[in-house]
Image 1 (cartoon, helix red, strand yellow):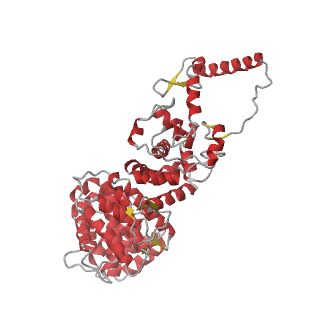
Image 2 (image 1 turned 135 degrees about the horizontal axis):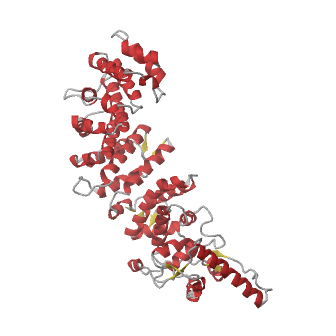
Image 3 (image 1 turned 30 degrees about the vertical axis):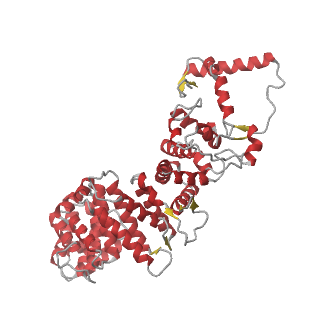
Length: 535
């Protein structure tokens, strides 16, 4: 690349275009430029590009200059010094312009490359965001967004306007306080996309360009709402939830883009007050046919159903434990909030996640139903996922300990029960928040095998012959004392720290292994009681 770089530095006006095009062609896939380390070559190249942009009247050459800048900005070396105030002013001129600035076949390609370059520069050099804000580029972007309703702008320009604003708000969170009305503009943009897509067709089908734009808008709204209170921004959350509900139903020809869109919808919902989740539910109109899977108590639960479908897809994806939290936590958070604050949503989720038990021969964590997946998360190495899944299951069980043990098994539920001081049974303080109406889940299959269900494993276990059947009393006593000695040795060595259930229902450490016998009978009675169906 030394020759191509040297050609740009030494080129006269007649060779600017060819020199830039050759460099772009050869460097388009490069991310490192070791040739620029030598001497002052990096500074010389940037200065040469600066002179070309300042001097040239050819829009194609200016565009290629900014493409070159976008490629060079992949390297983070000295970007703060290289992108001086003169560069920032030139970028403002070619991206925001003045009152007479118009998008045409000459200005649009240049503006597009400037916005891409600015995105790269700010992503790789955060201090540049302050310069961009200070010079007024952010104000110019906002002014242009206001004009979207009145003038026709290229879709790609809209996309990079929003993307650049997203980066600015991510890097400089305080900036959003200066633009309280920005969420209103973004919500208008979301509604405009829906109206445009719904013209002359029954279902809403978005193009790839529209999906990409909407995803960036949702990401920007996430930034604006993630740490905001009502005094920071102007936003009607109920209206926003209604818009997000509509985007749960849209379709596109690109499945990956469609799932990406729904993921952004879910992420944004985590920032929204759960009281407004009522807008996710649509009253059923008598003149419209609604599939039975969406119907519940005269409400259309299509948005909630789509969330469950999305959750099932996420569960079925083969992902590492380290990435599970990022993938699953937003959706589980929304479901927990929904079930906590809205009775009808809780009952609908219970119908689909914890239906009446029929498969009593498999452990709760075995299988591919939503209940099986959630029960597996109860013993996940991720404490956050463990907590979210246990919260959701406990809420769907109306904070009833016995019901949770029935659906998840005492072994899987032990973590939540220990945290809430319910290992020895009893009533959770939140159980009184739910109605006492019957939600009977005892099926014929469950009733027939209830006597043989092991509350610890949560499934039916056929009677098996005792291993001590043919032992004498002396042999039994010998094996018992041998076990006690082994456990006592482990306790003294610090290898294990046995606990028993204290009076507060939480585990407490013991000093001697024989203390485990205390309270064993009452705890066994509790486990036996978990077999009864209290629904």
